[in-house]
Amino acid sequence: DSTEEETARLRFMEQALHERVIGQEEAISVLSKSIRRTRAGLKDPKRPGGSFIFAGPTGVGKTELAKALAEFLFDDEDALITLDMSEYGEKHTASRLFGAPPGFVGFEEGGQLTEKVRRKPFSVVLFDEIEKAHPDIFNSLLQILEEGRLTDGQGRVVDFKNTIIIMTTNLGTKDITNGPVGFQASGNAQNDYERMSGKVKEELKKNFRPEFLNRVDEIIVFPHLSHEELLQVVDLFIKRLRDRLYERDMSIEVSPAAKERLAEIGWDPALGARPLRRAVQHEVEDAMSEKILYGEFKNGDHITVDFAGGEFTFAAAPRGGGSAPAAESVPAEV
Image (tube, rainbow, N blue to C red; front, top):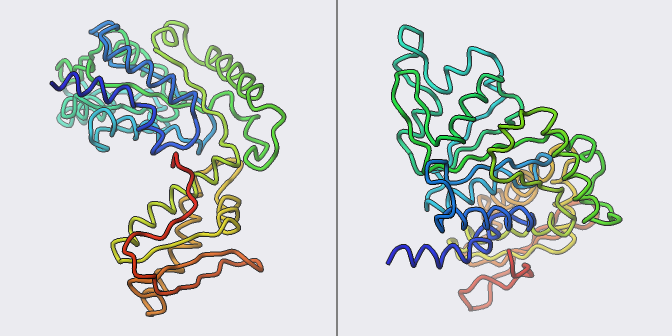
């Protein structure tokens, strides 16, 4: 029975989301509980399946969690509809989102949001940097949150009951962004989190009308990643690389020194862990691709990556008989 199956899956929701999102225990826990409430039928059936504000600095996993949620709930990463609200700051852009009225330019096309939801009613809709949207847009958003539907420019009713609405913002996180939190022993992470949480909610109250904030199921605050968590993100990217190498019968081991260096290069005070993927590509994958192309590394090799004397070093040795990838120290939860 599919409902039993879903119930069983929902019990392990946190675990599934943690496979893709490092850290952010609190965010994942609040989100999972809220989704379970919805799925257990404890919410107004007219409203969307969930509405959340994800608040926090750049590069700490807000978008990644939205992606993970879409994949978890709908088995489809493409079930994520992303709208960059910095493109909808002018008054006239509201019609681009919800469809232009008859007789106006763009009438035939329908709205960026309404068309996508009409085609994919089961989806996670991500409004990125919601604070940048024009105030007019909030009236329509409020209607979606309250009634679970919206009439587009062409007069068609678009149903949002099966969508999950996520709005991201970094309001209230500006002054928190200054210190490279990843690389300092923070006095007390819990205090920092509560301070940041309070600050974020204060800023949201200044920027959004109370009836809008009251309609959102949860305001979820994402703190900076700790140094330990940054290293886990590095492990996650290395694991993905290892899976690709496995197809070539190659394995890889990355030394703690190399991981530390990648975490250091890949963390930026303003961008969080966003540059990390690029750091792994640039410092490790590019060098390895060259060596594979020039025949220095061959199928069946075990590759060791280290960082010494200010640079990354690579060594290859034929793998010992076994066909399983070489063991590598990766935390169990990654």
